Amino acid sequence: MSDEAADRLVGTWRLVSARFEPDGAAAFDMYGPDPDGRLVVGPVHLAVIITMPGSAGAAPNLIAYSGRYRVEAGRRLVTAVDLASMPAWVGTEQAREIAIEGDHLLLRTPVGPHPASPGKPGSGILTLRREA
Image 1 (cartoon, helix red, strand yellow):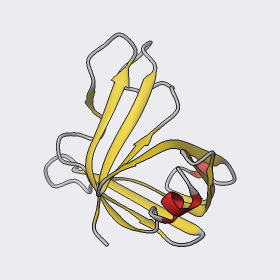
Image 2 (tube, one colour):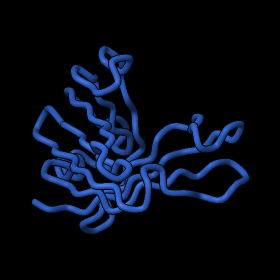
Image 3 (cartoon, helix red, strand yellow):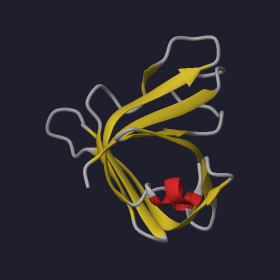
């Protein structure tokens, strides 16, 4: 992805799907069947917010983080996290492989564990659609 293509990240993206692909097992929805979320990317700073419906009458679960970002090798988005719903992420870098296909953005997490897939690490894949 060229610098011009990296500039295409700037804007607002709406979450379409969030799947986890464990090694050697069936993929599943990471945040339930109807997650909602946004990725808002400015020239140097981004914010991610994902909500998952809670059980009846409960508040929704939330994953959120923000920070300055850079694009490496045209296909890797690295965020220096300065604020997060998971305190352990503050001060770390979160990296995602990226691909822009038309008005869709694909973000792939590094291979790692997921609580719903014990013993079977895999990657999370978020698909987002450009809103603005």
